[in-house]
Image (cartoon, rainbow, N blue to C red; front, side, top):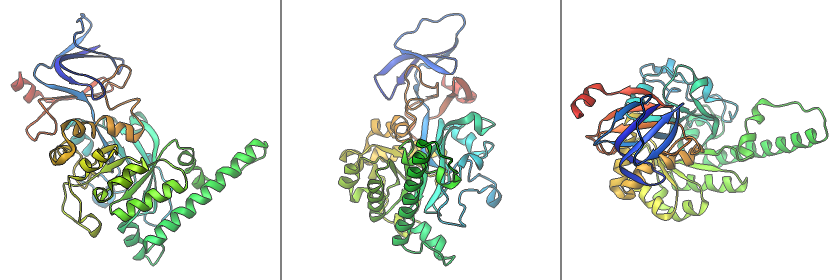
Length: 392
């Protein structure tokens, strides 16, 4: 067992203990209390003067599938050969040896939602995974975790250059509706055949849509511009599907529509220059505006657009620009977990949840804060020895 004691324990779902304890056993959180009696079989971390928090969560990125230091050989983000590819699975392209995972761990990022890019109207299945391990099979928390779809500039640019649909926003929406209509028909046909005990020949491409249609996972909608956000919402409601609004760069222009949709927003990457037309209005004010309107908000780096280790700093800028400190921290912990559909496992310090815990010298949104320990599934996977010695 591992006991963390005397730290400022931010549970992110309940009380904050100014001096509290967290007990870990068998990879899970066993207790979170003001005082826990030490026993001889416990390994002890004295966290006096530190912040003890749930591991930070990146709700949208491409870590492992667009590898650092590898160039084209390490980039498996976009299968830009046909616009509708729901059958693609991120788990088959992510390299756990991507050096960016080490950067994530050192920054206290313990889990990520990662997967295909936005070249295609339908890009394929995302996975939610831990950031430490040798095999994807051991790192997966949820797979599939979402189905990537994309609106706006990217599909237009990619397929216009090939002389194929879509070259307009109309075609992007039409192709998505067509794909979803075929998926609904496939689902109905399969259900009827199985109910009658008839033989049914499965279609691998259509099978990928079933978790979406059954509302087990959301559509993960890449949409920056306000009109693209509204198109995503329109289609999601037409087919009665769960959806997350990813990037949502102009969400501050239409906060009432985003809030009314009840779809959560994963906002960013904002710590970059305005590289294309659809992000010309991006601002760190967007998360605060949407939160104040009633939308559940998370922050993204869209790694590698912004390196994943700066996620907490991006949340800090959003906090400064109106989101506030408490919601800034929630946006990279419990809110991110809820949006990704994994809050039963991660995102807060609660009994029974995975023991993904980070010990910081202070507020992780502060540029001067250091990570002292990163713990994933109850194991210390990073220890900042130089800082720990100096800190104590």
